[in-house]
Every structure is written in structure tokens, then in C-alpha cells.
Image 1 (tube, helix red, strand yellow):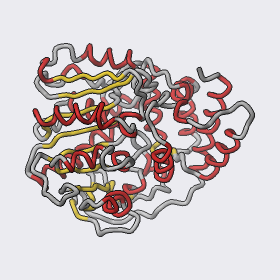
Image 2 (cartoon, rainbow, N blue to C red):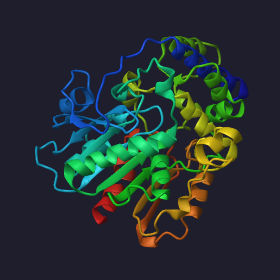
Image 3 (cartoon, rainbow, N blue to C red):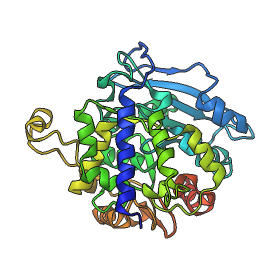
Length: 408
């Protein structure tokens, strides 16, 4: 077990991350047109050039502008490594919290879901949500502006996810499969519960599903929630959470040098004890991740941990009346997801974020789902990151996932 002293020190690191974020120099925004769908010119440090093409795959960079002005990056892999064009429907891959599209590309082509899908004839599209390295532009705002970070996962559902799905649908003319990890599953549940996008999506594969969060066992996530750390930082004017800021990295290095502290697997404090990550994947991960997010997004997730509800952002009774016309934030009703919509869910016994008790509550919400439209997989020794970085996920998770897609 992680002791309280260690957890509080880690919480101090989180504090320093936000403080560092306030002083960072940001990218400048660029002008664009609302709703614009466009291809992006290739860049030397883009995901296509750095992560996909060196493995022998064709990759195209795209951008999509959301209705609230964020200019988001997408990558398309339309062929297998052999060069054969995709014959199966498109698949949209949506990453989780403080990650980006590189999530799906970190392992070898035989171990990473994006490459596996492409080699199995699927038209692969990779999403990057607002605030991440390749989606840091806006029509009128810069990431150095507080207003740029005025969003939570509500906006990711309403704007980012909607734009990604519409973009793929517009460019292919086909309904698409959706695959999400962690926060990417919460985005899907929220959207589907409001009957959004279902006319454009064939099925959804959800890895480490996040919906209810009352039983989260992650000591770092729970400590941040219980001491209202994100709320304090927000009211201090620190609206960006950037875990790669230099002062935070330096403090982490100091923390790891202290007697009795083992930092060989820092993710255990957040995700649980991942069973199946290799060192080369960890090294590649640290070159690219984690990514910034909004402090408000962390507040929203902390609210879910404290309340146990799947609800919109809670602004407080007075502001809730202004935003929602009621004193409490509206709930996302997962039970309203159509019972005949195909769902694949895979969760792990060692996951401290997608806790088994929370997943069981989610499954109770879906108890009336058509049995032949719901596939549930449980992997006892898997933690949160194993589902996207595990060296054996191709056999344990992706083969069943592929069978599910082939049926739908």
C-alpha cells in the first residue's frame, strides 16, 4: 500500500505543476474559420512523421476546428503496412486524460492498436483533444490565456468528440467504430447517454471504462479530490495543468532521490500496478507524455469522485441556475443508451482508476442491454495502462476487440 506521507508529497508535486504552468511561455494562436475541416501540411515533429511513417505506414495529418474555436489535430492511416487500402469501416481512436493520440502508437506494430487495426483492413483515425501538443491552437486564443483553459470534459463531449466523429463521417461517408481509453470512454458514455452521434457510430470499444468514480483507489487522485487541490489552484488563477513543466520535473527528481522512495514505477500511485509494460515503452512514453489538460477538467473529475455521480460540471447552486436553469448539474443518464447499441468493455482487477466496483455499478446501469450487443471482458492482473501499453494486450484485449468489430 502507498503510505499517506508519500501520497501527500505527490500531491505537493501536483501543486508545483500548476504553479509552474502559470509561468510557462505558450504557443501563439492562429486564425481560422469556424467549422473548417482541412488537411494539415506535414511537419517534421508531427505524429505522422515521428510515430507512424518510420514504421512503414502511410499517414495523413488533418485539422478540425470546433464550434468553440479550438483547432484540433487528427491523423489518418488509410492503408496497411503492405500498402493495401482499407476495406473495413473507419475506426476513431480517442485517448484518455493527459494523453494524446500517441497513446495508440507507443508499442511495436504488432502490439499497438492503431497499427493492428490498419493491418486488419480498417481505416484508422486518431484524435487529439484540445490542450495537447498537436491540438494547442485556437481561432482567437493562445494557451497563455486563461480563457483557453476554460473547459472540462463536458466540452470534450459537446465539441471535440462531435467534431472528430463528424469529420470522419464527412470524409468517408461511412458510419464508424469508436475505440476509447479511460477519459475517452467517459466522453463516449456521456455522448451516447444523450443520444448524440449514434446515427454516425456503428459500435464502441471501451478500455478501462470510466463512468462512476466513487470507488477510485488511486491515492493521488483521491488525495487531490479530498483536499480540493484543483479548486484551490483554479481560484489562484492557475487554469492549466501541465505535468511536463520543468519545475515539476525537478521536484519529482528530488522526491525520487529521497531515502525509502522507489520511483521505478511512479504510475502505481495513479493507475495501479501495471503488469505488462516493458522498459522501452516506458522510455518512449516519457518522451511524449503526459500532456497538459485544464485545471477545470481535474476539478470536474474530482467532483465525480466526491459525489459518485456522472454529472455535468458543478458551478455551485447560483451559477448552475445560470448555466443549466437548475441548482444542481444535470446528470448523464447512462441507462438511456439504446439497448441495441453494440458495446465492448474491458476492465482490469488491478486498475485504481477504473475500479472494479465502479465498473460493476456501470454494468448495473446497463443491465437491460441486449445480451448479444454487450461484450464484457475482465482481466484480473491488468491495471489502467496495460490496456493500451501492455506487451500482451494484442492477444488478451485486441484480438477479442477485433472479433467484436468484425461482427458489427
